[in-house]
View (tube, rainbow over the protein chains, first blue to last red):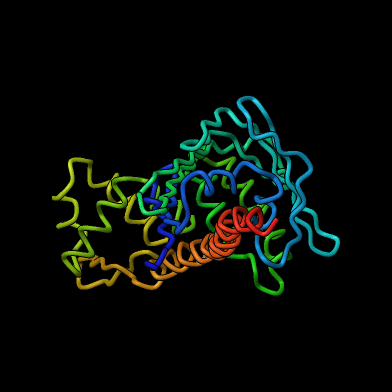
Amino acid sequence: MRENTTVITAEPGRQELFITREFDAPRELVFRAHTEAELYEQWVGPDDLTMTIEKMDATDGGSYRFLHERAEHVYAFHGVYHEVLKPERIIGTFEFDGLPETGHVIMGTTRFEDLGNGRTRLVHQSVFQSVADRDGMIQSGMERGVDEGYRKLDGLLPTLQAKAQTN
Amino acid sequence: MDAFSALAEPTRRDILELLASNGKMPATAIYKRFKATPPAISQHLKVLKDANLVSVQKKAQQRIYYVNPEPMKELEKWIKQFCSRVEKQYSKLDALLEKEKLKQDEQPQLFDEL
């Protein structure tokens, strides 16, 4: 089995980021793990959070809402599926409900490439509304998983807002 | 301005790359390498300095600029930590896919037993 490493590309000053990752599984299965709620909820989200799927209708024009919970903290994400083309592509929007203002929407395209021999390459592109939105998301990723992570995240949100306004 | 925002401007990234490849450079030498006016470049240098991306040394009448490596390491750390969060998630997906593959393989066997 080859080593499957995650590659994230975020060029300075750009509004997008790319995630590339290969899997030792056929494309249909990797695709299903992204579109079927009972599979999706088993792997999405950080380990220290409980993932709840409030709604997930992975069809063209369908929508989703996920909750990540730990103790009294609830973080919600929602969006719509623009195109769900089995088994090769998912295009949709993503918004984190916990930001101080709404409207910071990310457009995501996930492509699943059949590499043969039961292997699949996933290439995900996220396009943000501003460079500040993208960098804020990368920086908030850093805060997760540490003990006082949530307090830090709360502290980060006003910064995100300030950055979004000056942008 | 933080390092990420300072780097969002293409001219500032060019200045940083120039300094990274040339080491220390006086402001006047930096001005010569750009089409923009010296005051414009000087403003960019100020932003880079405020974001702690470059440092400046005064030598006689000259201001010598050089790259400060620490914040660049900080940026790298952010990306790395973000990457490790995404990777953790995909490791869980790996395990799930293995489980699902086994399920698919097992199904015909179940029928054989029946």
